[in-house]
Length: 283
Image (tube, rainbow, N blue to C red; front, side, top):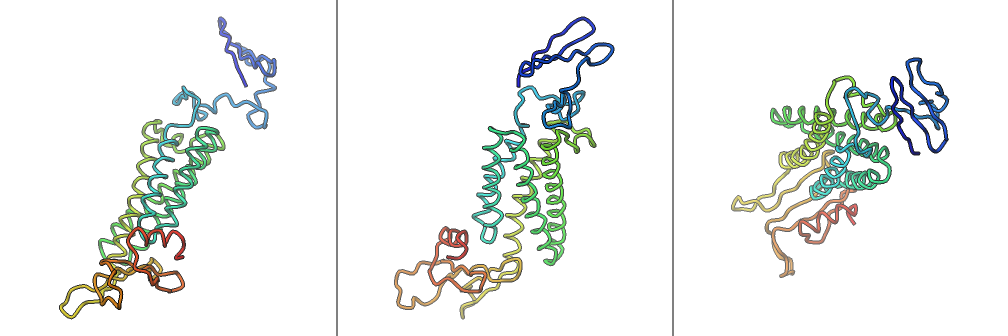
């Protein structure tokens, strides 16, 4: 759809070249408003480009908000990082998929890309929120860290939901209610997603270290650590030493993953092999 703007003394006209219609704004209003139905599927919302607030906002390029690109890129990288944290493969893969789809959609269909970024932010925020909840039973540090992570996760989910609504309606309600500029909003949105991703990595690792169990050698050195999922099920073991059992090629330390059904992997895994094994669901 193409438009030309004609400016006259005390009046101006918008000409719709595709429909061959022209609406003139004068002191008496618009002469023809039949095609300016913002509620209809074929209507025209003149202020969607600036979030329905032409006084405060602008959109010089007509493309996706710059933070949509930033968020989608962050979610792709954050998801990749989470995939390398044992037990975080589920949220990691979902963020990678959402971030990648967001980058593609931002180029082809900005509103869809913005909505996908919002949905991925909700997933990222929920990951942080649930990780925070799992830390609350781990003493004072867990209370503080877990509580802070829950707040960050909740705020990330709120911004994500706002992005979905903004993509659907053209109105950014957080900016409308708070008066935040594009820069303040975009960097806050980015910062919350970054804090949620990093908080999950740190929180999951902290919980695993605090809840692990150890088997000791007779000299008091550690023979094995066993790590657990947030629900208490076994996640993986790391063996530092044990008899070769007829296998002279055993390397230490090595890992053994646990399936959700409680079956321990027999293979002596490297860390990368453990991660790949967990990504495949323990197969």
